[in-house]
Length: 626
Picture: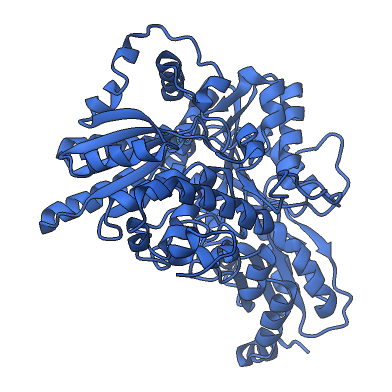
């Protein structure tokens, strides 16, 4: 037991075993304390907020009714699992969440035995739980398995793949369908509209009432609200008020030992118990510090430059105003990808497909077949989920789809599941793709315009955060494909001579390091096709080439430079700097870059170490350099 001033009940809970000893009539008071603890703690440190307020009672009920960790509870995505972390021995470390060396932002198997499956991307819980239930059956173990998935996560194809297979196998498992009418933005789609009509029919108080569903062709399905899930072989129960602890625990007790696939429809409110978050769950999904009484955020300092996301959103509106064939697509990331204004100005040309990255990519391919100009706005980490469609449906058919890839490189506090660490590697190996990486916001606009003008697939990959503050061209002109540029010349003071070939956001630290080294800096602009002429010119004029990217070093842009040199039998020494061959955890972008040696100081150290190496001395002697 740990005394916490003002938290008489919460201080008694270190593990779910402590929770199960608590009298049932004290659980609602514990829920109040947990919600207040979340509000006060996250008000100080920030983090995922509104979703966690919505799962307090659900987390309590699950750990009361199931014998965790023997029984498995799999959380989908994980940004609603803070209450789960509080109840499983991590309350005292909650203030470290998403910080370097602190608690992981999502469920993480190495962090706790109660985190049964590592998550970060959505819609994996049903498949993972099905695997666990199948494993328990094969081993003859009586453990129970529960998957908790939101209505946003249920829009993804993988969720239905899991339902289909689990129902076919007749597995003893429970899927909790946590329905709050929200993804990060409002949830979309026919299943959402079905839930909204169901809530209206049953007269339930639910978030769905804030937005009317689209008109249905018939209402017959409302007589059997679980018919869709029952078709998959699941027994449907609900809807149940997810904030009514006695009702919720009674229902879970009834379903705990039920045989076969079960699905419980639970209705919750994102932001529950904190009025500002209930009123605006989008704003309070992921937050910085705020006033835990009023919900007010500190006044923002005027940014020196717009974010790349804002630059993209403004560019897309400008491009759509000039060309009626331009359309925008997002897989449930309207706010994060900068499409809010576009969705208002061009609603008929705006497609939010829900959490369905595969569909987003192939939808774009279909639009391109009809001679439209689709721009698919997607985070780097989420494009990984549509990789087959990118190859099979877009690239093989050489369709002119522009991928606006946000959050390239290290993104910071969301950690390994969200870093855009692999896109340059997985894109540059695909035939027909043009891959661009802007060094500033004006370059970003020009590259996006280049992509729209091309008659083939293209990608513009840019980082999270603010640009460099450069002036923006009123009319961004397309670039010459496959041509880089020199952004710093050497002044001839230093030997050996060094040239840094930098890609995207790494141009800025390259320039800072080059001032000390008196090195040449090339902004390569294009990862594919590479500017082979520029590479060979720099190889002939310098004693060391350094490639610099915030992407996996293996198979990345630097590997492409190596390939150009090998093809020409050029023996200039090369130092490839990029992300190391291991997954990088959470922390600020600045902390992580320093940790892996990709800040200015780390780049300098790596180059200076390489300059001291014997093979470089041998190469200089062989070429007659002085």
